[in-house]
Amino acid sequence: MTRIKCLIVDDERMARNLLEEYVLDTPFLELAGKAENSLKAISIMKEIEPGLIFLDIEMPKMNGLNFIRNLVQPPLIILTTAYTTHTIDAFELGVVDYLVKPFSFERFLKAANRAWDSYQAKSNSIPTVHEDFIFVKSDGNLEKVFLHDILYIEAMQNYIMIHTEKKKLLSYLTLKIMEEELPSDNFIKIHKSIIVNQNKIDSIRGHQIQIGNKQVFISQNQYEEVIKKLISDRLIKR
Image (cartoon, rainbow, N blue to C red; front, side):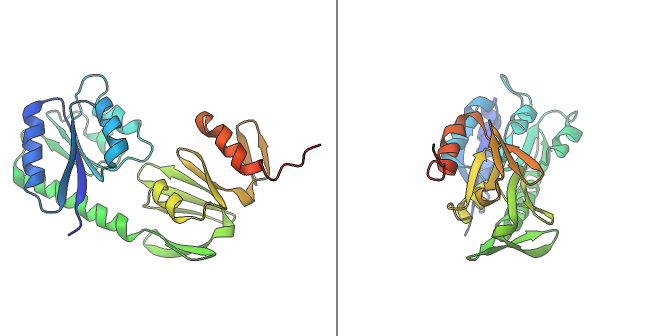
């Protein structure tokens, strides 16, 4: 059975232990890690790539809401908190559920089932890639997108926006999945939240790439690698 890898982030030991017990008692969840603050969670996430985070809000160094805001492609998140004052902010950030401490296993399981439904929907929307086109799930439909029509792809929280010459498609996917599926000869990641079709690039000025009437930016830490791949063997030198 497929299971969702979970990360527990809470500064209270008893809360972490209770969540661990609940996760271990849920067949479709797998405990992959625990952290006592958001900064440690960021480090752990690089190693385990969790599909679901059980996240406290009020924590030292960085609270849970700011932690979410700093994630480019956040996984599914269930907030676990003793406070009800952040409900609106939480759901604007796209969390799956909001558990108010103390909560029962039954209430935990209800939230976990919501996460499972979202996880399954996301898995079922993984694009089918052919030689010159892909199918992506957008607005309940399977949309055929020719690779040569794609200008760039942009990460937007738990979604991606595919910008083509004629339209934009919003799909419940991560940029990581798209990067793995698209041919690397034609597509390159220029920023932690942007992949471009290098065949559509009109010009490069500093860190700015012009694609049609759109401008996208190369991140500072990826600039040299991107420029080398884009023009090293295509630059006509005097």
